Image 1 (cartoon, one colour):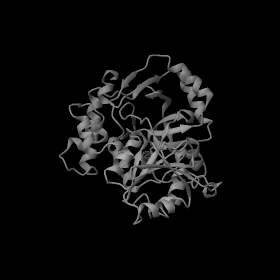
Image 2 (cartoon, one colour):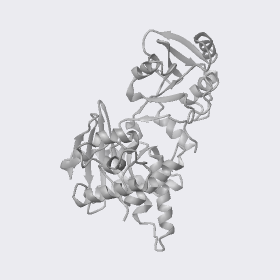
Image 3 (cartoon, helix red, strand yellow):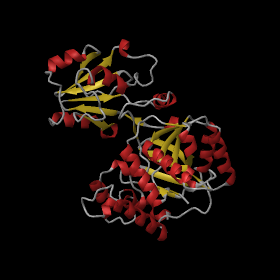
Image 4 (cartoon, one colour):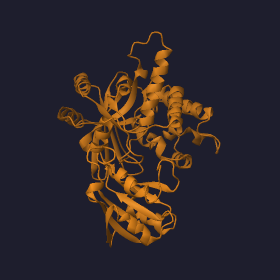
Length: 401
């Protein structure tokens, strides 16, 4: 029901822990967190991977369908989904993407996935018989699609709601047969799409499709399990924020020795105010209540490697690994990552508190760099991109008949 959208709308399942989700869903019986984080409806301390958790998600999802809180569209359609966060606006198309295109890399990836997180999503999809969390995709801008979307958004939206974090979510249903055909035709001729966020959800959808195909002697490729829920935005509207680093100690070095080693790869300039990098190859560093601007020497930048030339790679290869001995940032407990949405003040706070010894601010990775890595069939370093605003859960789901 559109009038219940404000009650249903929820952050993505993977941005809240259980206690945060429990607090958010308090006195909100229709919050989608009862489906995406169903352990909140079970005794405290319940393992989020317990079979009872997935069963509870199924029960809650079925109840919301039965009560009409969630309604199935009577015919196939697209949706146009607009997000507005402050001055930023992006408008995309909600669709089901082809698992076959994902499997043959027409829908391109740039991250490794973890088996345990894949398993969780597989169990959730299988138990609900639905995909409830969309994969965030992007495509090289198409003026034809821009024109179609612009026609649609002049109409009355089905949903228009502002979430607790101030982000406005607006949804239009696209039922017109000619518009549906035009959107389908345009996507069908695109050489590829790119996963921005949702690698585990797309990998899980592929696994579910393979298992259901194997068990279906009448499989013909048109079944709903051959597709996965996605929201697809043009690349020129994507917003990637900085993804910054904090480290617990200086690897046994004192301040002066540490700065001398940093100067072997970077020009080091003390600054009187916070340092937000202005371009690639430039970094901010906060150490003992002092900000520095670091500029990497050009000879340190590999010219033709789409991964090694990224700022996150340059910092890792020239400072974090050789000086601070952070060899594997995926597993090393001495390093943590701070999304740009929290601001540079969060870096100062964590260093000033004594929790961390040094912080680094980075220039945001560009969407073009992300696409170049995917085109080269390579993998981005961990914590390279922080997309904002986040997609909401609960607006649209894909039921597997």
